[in-house]
Image (cartoon, rainbow, N blue to C red):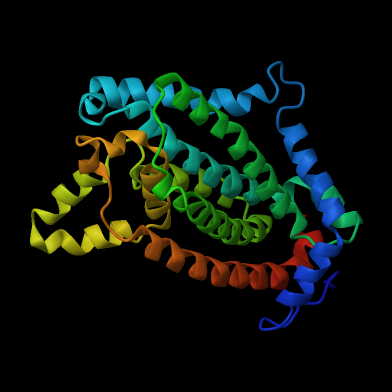
Length: 294
């Protein structure tokens, strides 16, 4: 079977591809707008679902975890604490889940028109960032309602954590987008994997519970360090430290992660850039067979 595009060398090609993507930036912008419009096409509420979905998650977890399990009585401003983690997690799942089906979902264009195939997952990333900014309005409204504001000293963590998140999610999305062309079961595996990953990230519970449970027995301390190696755990902890005003209270300080998040995020950004490079090279080596598989 003849390949539409011959496989490119693994160690060369990232730079030319980046230049080519820049040349197609107007098309990328159109694809981002398409992602935003198609997602809620024929929906009565339209873009309001972007705000309604995280609010529904917030309501469910606030009642289940905050009220029934009592976390709301222990963690000050539990609603804001919860939403800061959900804000980061929603962006991550939007990118990873959307990228996974981005090539298969645009099979008609892939088979008929040439342009960098990376534009499809990158359009998902762009749409996810736009939705993230819209959802951040809810957090600002919460600050206005409670008239409490996060400490300016930690706000630098937000762009660092956001950069780390986008890099990591983009690299993972590129790999999954390519893999899903050849094995459609990946879509369902991603759904299950994200569910497990969610509960391995301190969003609806605080990280101190994990520390207490795993460090009581010295033989499990290594598992706690493995838990903290989770990139999303570090990103969520950074969002919580930067955007949760309740952590500035004496009661809330007990739930602040006391590690060096600036260093951790710096390492994640460097590793994330290398991961994006690696994922793009795998994607480039695979795309020659996309048209035949689709």
